[in-house]
Length: 47
Image 1 (cartoon, rainbow, N blue to C red):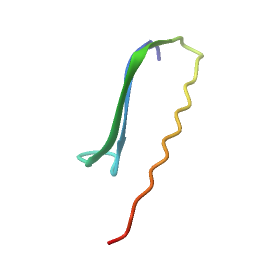
Image 2: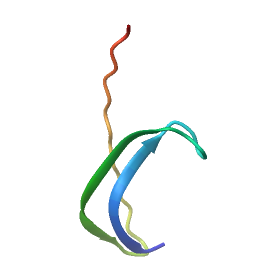
Image 3: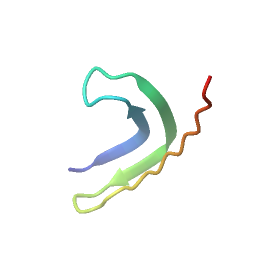
């Protein structure tokens, strides 16, 4: 599809999950054949 993208979220489940990370950015307009790849790296400490 198409649309104006302004945020991305990382959740721990496909539905009713916990939001682990949210990033808001300036608008990125997506065309019908465009793809957007976002890489999120998290580091967790044990304990």
